[in-house]
Length: 448
Image (cartoon, rainbow, N blue to C red):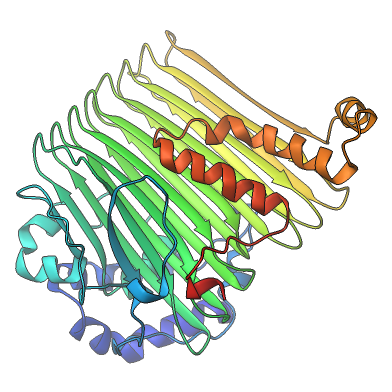
């Protein structure tokens, strides 16, 4: 057993009682099995197909602190975080490290039956609801990172939207990383949309301190028949942040999912999306936008699993890499034997703006049905010399011309964002990012 695995195995053996005492029975019910699965698998090597572009053992080698005893973190996120999306009316919630912030909740009232709360608290008060869904799709025997998160996670976020309830406001969740020492955070998110429910979520990752953070996150989203889920995940942290996120989405008949992941600033990011169609007539849109420079690294890995007929998937990921940045995209679309009349499109386009930047891309179709319409493709290229020359001839500086071309390249992804105020905000953030500016909102202590 490698040293990187051993420290977590020893940690769990020594602190399992403490971990369980500060969590809920439902979460504890799968914890020991997750530990056994992690011991059996260890961290995936690059020989594992879905992890071939990122050395996971190296990411977990450093000795991070953990807040297993659930000490209170001294922060008032409502005072610290003043950034918002103009003209976007949201219900704003905070998760500090891995704990749902309960001291001050939004004044806006949610529709009857809707729950946005601490996963640990709801699991304690209503274990039946959580037990039906928790760790059912995020199988610990299939992924050791999910197993590690499941054995260590003590709290997180629970969102429940009952049958035929439609949320008028988007739910905005700010994940704030806060610590005086280098810290490992294990966050869990469970989203349940019953039949006919509709909800939009904006998750924003931010760092409040200039420390090294290692975050594991597992999101499970269950989308019922005729339900609609919009999930926007925006990462804007710093170069000392390492983020490993596994997202699992299950769709029932005639449901709709719009999943968007935007990486504007980071250190090392590894995102995995597993989406499965369980009912006919469902559709999904999976979009990704990555901007990386210096020594930043972003690895997106997706699996769209068509198990039933008459489903549609559309996937578009775009990267802009500069300096010594490294990007990776591996997207697999699986069409099973019974999934006739499948319609799938997968595209990964990449702009490498420096000779020292690197992009690895692997779009893949695996089709076992004979009546389908599927296509996939990828491109890796540099800035268009003819376009650069054209703009330079008209008095545009080389730096500005480069920015305009990069901005136009990623616009296709941003324009797919259905929340108009968020779309306009992202246009501003992306332009600032290309200009080398961190987003600084007036009054926000996180940026100072």
